[in-house]
Image (cartoon, rainbow, N blue to C red; front, side):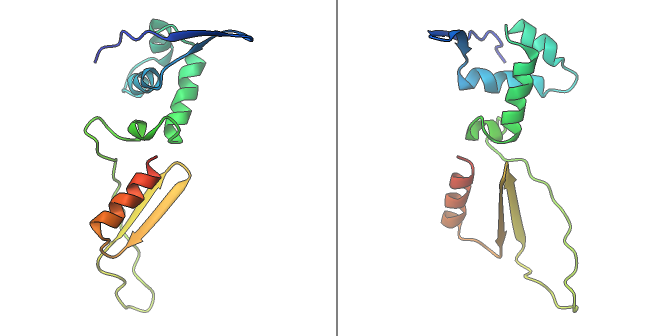
Length: 128
């Protein structure tokens, strides 16, 4: 991965504030999330404050750095499998399955076998 990123500088009436492109923020967050790396060193190497990188990491975890930030490099979403509790009364619940998708503050629960087109529309809206 090429780590030679250059921030875009901008001047305005309040002073000199660097406006970093979204790709720059995502790249630094990705570097900082690798095991065993120092966020301070990554920040120093790229000319930003470590607190700024931690702020971008928070935005990333909240899903506020764009849909691409929520996806891995291969375009797949992380999946966690969890067992379900038995239904009281001994009757079987919907045996088709349940999909629960949590992204930031959004939680979507899909039961049964959803239509592929409908599922694609839901995922498109949630990942925006």
